[in-house]
Length: 120
Image (cartoon, rainbow, N blue to C red; front, side, top):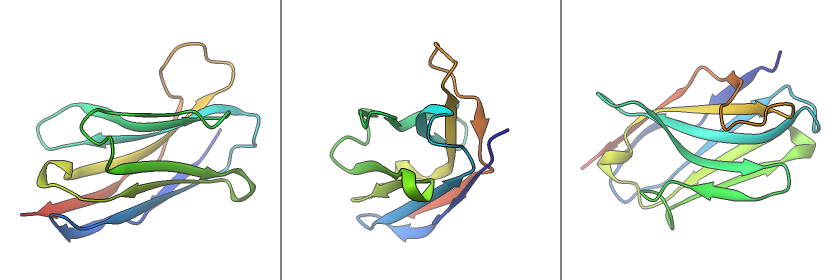
C-alpha cells in the first residue's frame, strides 16, 4: 500500500502562486506515474497534471503555461507549482499514484487532499 500526503494548500488572491508538495511511500519502481487532481465545488475530480517515471509531463488545457509538475525521486516527492492562479483554480487538490502493473489511465493510490482557494 502506497501512502501519499499533500501539503502547501492555502488561500491566495488571483494572480498569486502556490506550490503543492506530495510525499509518498512508494519505491521508485513501484509506480509509473504520479498525478495531481482537482475537485472543484460542484464538479467532478479532474486530472490537472501528471508526470511519468520517464519524466514525461501532461497538463489539462486550463492550466498549461501556468502550472508545472515535477518530482524528486530521491526524496519521494512530487510538486505542483501553480502560478497566475485564477478563481476557477479553487478546489481540493489530490496527489495520486499509478502502480507500475496498471496498463490503464486510472490511479491506484490517493492522498487526503489539500484545499486551494483563489479569491478575485
